[in-house]
Amino acid sequence: MEHLHIRTARPADLTACAAIESACFPPEQAARREDLRQRLAAYPDHILVGERQGAIAGYIMGPVIGQPYIEDNMFTDPGCHDPSGPYQSVFSLAVLPARGLGGQLIRAMADLARREGRRAVTLTCLDSKVGYYAAFGFQDHGVGSSVHGGVPWHNMLLEL
Image (cartoon, rainbow, N blue to C red; front, side):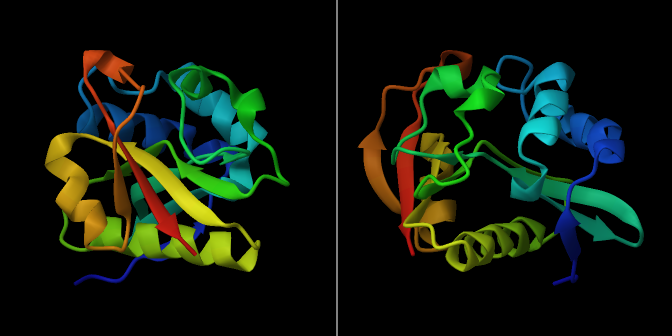
């Protein structure tokens, strides 16, 4: 497993993050470049990028929120970020193909949430990814209300 240099995002990372987002998600699920720009402006300390050989190879991002589950309207509302909230959300985990990079970013986000005294890390995922996130300790709370991109999503929670 290749080690990533993980750091908080900067505005200059927008182009790389947008390219990775569009490579990892179908258009109906991918965040628009403008949404990513707004997220970088609203909560840069909660967007972690992983660099491999000096280039961004992936990222994990999400605002701190006041409730345990993500709602669809949050994806386009950077104002949902509440720095004092108890839940670190993950709106997107996107990595270029390489073994182990996603796991390193998940662990880094969980470590950040612990340091900040959060109660849990929350995310939504497709049926096919439930097992992946469960391997990192996330519990499946069943299919939630999200229909982002026209598909059902599971609510997953990692208690800290």
